Image (cartoon, rainbow, N blue to C red; front, side, top):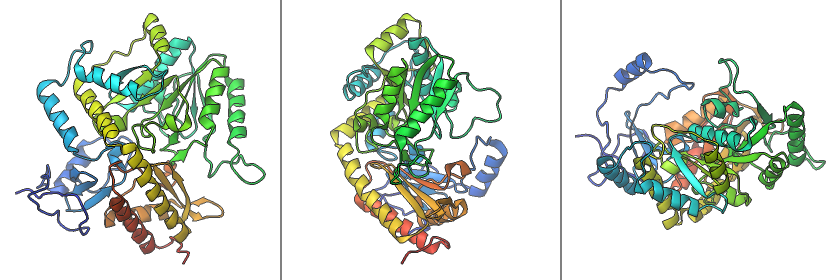
Length: 466
């Protein structure tokens, strides 16, 4: 009989408990060494180091490995499982649509697509009136950029330094964190603003505080000099996750929109990770009280199922239709993922998970600040709601990154039963990116914080302050 998994605390590095009341592990008996050998032989490396453990199950807030290790998932998979792994209502939705309404000809309409469009746009401010649905965040950003070019009749696109928008051509052209090298010329007409990094920016007021306004104006001055006069749009994340969970300063997004309006540009906001309640607001644009011209969603909308959205105004949709905008894909407006997205939104709104995210996020943030007060290697704690970053440094005064120490702490945390993503790539700079499912309880937050405390205490070089 396959081992069983269940939610709730258990001792770490012990066999997965067998329980008649919990869901079965999908792959209960595997030869891990054989699987690892096959992975090395048959899988292409796509830009990351594969983790050593083979995951054989996931349920709620936890993932389970072939070694019998239960791990608290504080990254929601790839920042996507917004309401947890194997949520029973999501499972039921997938099962019913897989059996009865899965995939259609791309020009056909179905009830879940229409319902999701209605529920989504009804939850957004006026000016975000119509939506269509694709598969990935990169795909939605690709479509939004294309719409902006067609609507404005211009082609230059501005992105923020350290951004991450996807790996398709136009999305990658606006992405300045990583992945641009080794392939020849990227899309023409791409420009970069300085990354808004309040912790490390050299732009400072006399009192030492972050002078983001001067930095932003300086960046636009450089872009105006470089532009050939065809500025179409600017794309931005409200929290730059891949950059290290950097939150846009208060007022930044409004100022950015004014810069766009002065230049006849559209503003695209990418809410792949911040959308649908993650940050204590239903959408991050609500927190900033800014309505972009185009909004893109992905990750959280599908709870791990490939689903993304492009939302825009009636006017932009009308003009783009007149000018033969085309983004016709095999899986555009597919019913099964749309049904999942519709159910995710229904659950988040019905169960008031936005308020929960805000409250539990404050509890998480307080715990991380307490950790910072105890260990000198914690250079900065930042974020909003259930989206936080913890930056590890060797010297707090000099803000010197210490990637080796960060890796050592990460490995200890994982061995104790907590996954809080620290990318193996140096470009991420030794920052723990924390984004648990928004159904997380305070008890599970405390469980993770306790593991973090133990990992810091047990790792040489963490600089205990008392």
